[in-house]
Image (cartoon, rainbow, N blue to C red; front, side, top):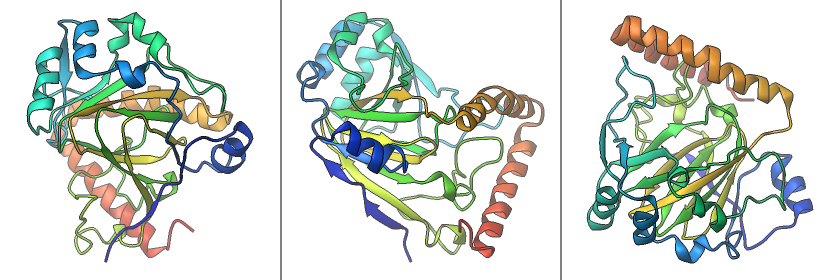
Length: 293
């Protein structure tokens, strides 16, 4: 028994017409190997350079421990000096990650070092894109992004394994109700199909991102990532044209998130236990009914 993981398509370059027809409109992932060949960042963004330009900042860190039911989903585990953290992930394995960090706010000149892929599509969102850092073996838990944006995720200074699933597999992945992440009790690399039978037969895609490669993740795609060496990434986000998806994004960011945080604060473990039980029931129902069709 195993997950059905196909390789994500990889190209050196792609034209706008081919990208829109074959990947954007059908919402199919793609790795563009040389999208960054004109970026100054491809050569400039070393660990030492980022330490120099970002400076002596304290940053929140996240680990692989299960989410505290009384805290928001993005609550950090601890804090550390940015430079000390960069030294740590170069020196030894660690499950500590920097998540949704905006170093460009502290070093605006980094804005000159990358280019949004406006030659492929429009609608890019962030003036200050998010960056992500991880040590060898650190894992980004299985989730989809709450704002439902298209993502161009470029990796630097190492390798990262990525597993993706279409949004349609949401229930079979044991999605936690009123949240955008999956039940944290299984290992997506080596799932226990007897304990989590809804995972059997799920179809996903996988790749290994190398330095300078860019992964296009369409709106709503579930993603799990594992750092194979101390390294970092930058994500550029763009709106989907669908007004239905934009409305769902707004609902996720306002009503759903505030409701979930309120219930966590009020009921804590009892609320979390109920959500996990419901996730299991929904997954089993989807499996029995043969979903997604």
